[in-house]
Length: 117
Length: 110
Figure 1 (cartoon, chains in turn red, yellow):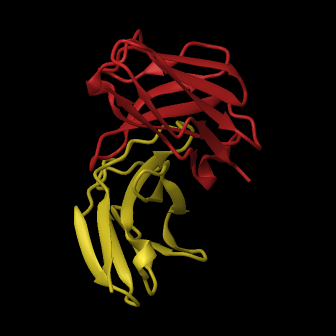
Figure 2 (figure 1 turned 180 degrees about the vertical axis):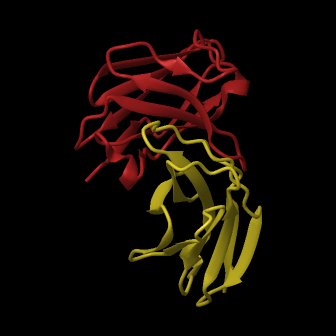
Figure 3 (figure 1 turned 30 degrees about the horizontal axis):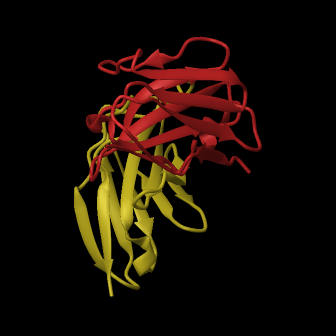
C-alpha cells in the first residue's frame, strides 16, 4: 500500500516553455503532498507544501509564480515549471502519506528528471 | 525540526554489518527519528522509524539511546545493492514536514 506515482519520469523541454509534473497517490487519499528538488549529488530541498483545496505553501526562496502548484483532488497534485530555463534542470520529487500516517513514514514518488535545453 | 548531522560517506565490504550514526542534539520531545534510503535517480524509500530504545524490521535496526541526541542505523550483512545514500531525519509529530540533511553516501565494495 501507500504508492505514490509521478509522471513523467523524465522530460526534456526548450527554454521558455512550461512543463507540468503530476504526483498521484494511487491507493490512498492525501490532503497534503510535498514537492522537493534535488540537484546532482545534493540532498533533497523542500520546495513547497501542496494542500488540497487551498493554496500551496512555498519555502523561502522558492518563486511561487515560477513553480505553480495545484492540488485539485485528494489524489493528485501538479507542479508546473513556467518559463523554464536551464538552471531549472533538476530532479523533482513529490511525497505524500495517508491520513495521520507520519508514524509510518512518507512515501515518495520515483521522481521526474527535468532537462531544459 | 531537529537538525541532523551524519558522516558524508562510508565504505564497507559485502557481508559486513554497517552502522551509520546520526547526531540530533536539538531533538524535541515530539520528534521521531526516521531513516530513508535513496538510490540514484529514484525517490527516497522509507527504512525505519523510532522514538527511543531499539526498533528492528526486516531490513534494519535503529538504536536510539535514552538521551535521544543521536541514533544509529544498523544494516546487517550489506550487499552491493545496499550502495545508496542514507538520510536521517527528525520528524515532528503533527507537522508532516521533512527537512533532509546531507545524508550518508554508503558504498559497498565486493
